[in-house]
Image (cartoon, rainbow, N blue to C red; front, top):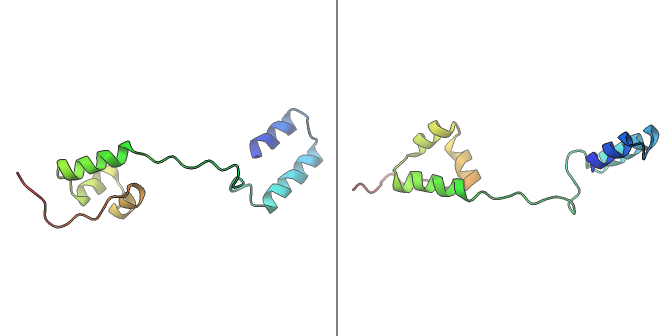
Length: 94
């Protein structure tokens, strides 16, 4: 909505006073920080990265601390973003 308002002002479709009024209206409704729910686009869910993380942990034996070092994130953040489970203390060694 903000982009439409800026474009309307730059093309001269609305004047300065109408633009100010509409910006105030958008602010009062909270639209300057978040689009209206009916216009909001659902966030995409990554499928490749979680699969890669599962491969690293299950197939290649990366530990939680290994992932933390490589990604420079705490494991709690990684698991929250990509749905990883807490690793048990034991792992299968071939």
